[in-house]
Structures are given as C-alpha cells and as structure tokens.
Image (cartoon, rainbow, N blue to C red; front, side, top):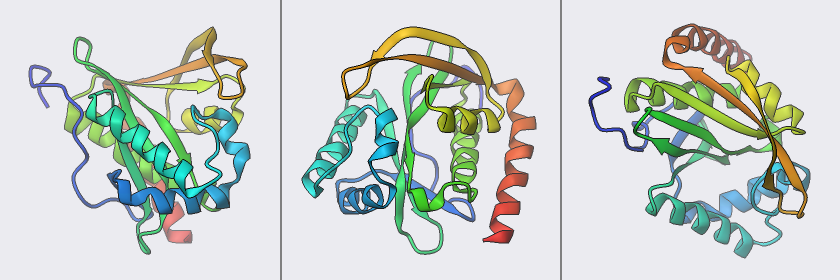
Length: 209
C-alpha cells in the first residue's frame, strides 16, 4: 500500500488462519469473554489495564470499554475465535495510530490459558501484522509490555520484534502500583523475514493440532 494513502484503523478482511479467526469485537462477545477469562484465571490479569472480570457484568463492562475506545478512534478491538469451533479465545487490538509516521501499536491482548503455547498467538499475530503492514500500510508496529511480564515479552520477541528500551515509572497497574514499560517495534522492512518465520511456526502448530 502506498504511504500516500489514508492511514486509519480498519478491521482485517473476513477469514483467518488455521488456528484463529479474527473479527471485530461486538457486545455479543461478552459471554465468551467471561467464559474464557474464567478458564484462564486472574493471574494473567495482573498485567492488563482492567481488573479480572468476576462476573458477566464485569465482562460486559470490559467489552463496552473496548467498544467505546473504538468509537473514539483510539483502538480497534478484535475477538480471537477458534478457527474450527468458533469458541471465543480472547481479544487483541490495534491502538494508538499515528498517521504522521504511519505507526500503530498492537496490544490489549489476552488469550485463553488452554491455548498458550499451541501456536494460536503466532497465528493471530501473523494475521494482525500482515494486515498492519500490507493492508493499513504501516511503516512500523510497536508493542508496550509491563517490564515484569516475562511471558508477554518473550512472546513479542518470538514475533521478531526489536527491544527498543524501557520507560521507567510509566503506567499505573490496576492494583495501584506503577510499572516500567518495555517497548518493542518492527519496521516494515523487517516484516518479510518475520512473516516467513511466523508462517512456519503456524504451519507446524496446525500440523500438530
């Protein structure tokens, strides 16, 4: 896509990979959100921007918050669905688009614990990065992770992202403590090699599923 074309957040095309299908988050996803969260457990929510959903109403509030950010143009939340069963597995988002430098962040991501280490995150990010670079025309994709979240940081690094540094005392966690934020990026010129590695990971995971 030409860098002179408009730069705005639009959803990826319908369909998806062999493990995960992505679609725009909707209010109807709240029940799936709640069910997947209960399977995953509250530990993962220590790193997220909202507290663990204890009730279905909490999950509905989480979805409503994501949709409000979408309506404000600040975020594009996506549902991650099992490619075979359609089960809700979690969510992920594009956010903080910057048309001046054609950058977009990927985050607000969580995945059901039952799918950790099985290639689902790789499949989801292969689709998201492909859409960012090839569909939206991004020149750089960035990630921000709690510096203490070793699982998330390792997953970002496995995508082929570069560690750019740490912002100290950067953001308050839901429990009131303040985190340092690890920053990562991938340039459009780095995407082709990363795409090949990610695609190979997804093929291997799908073959063993």
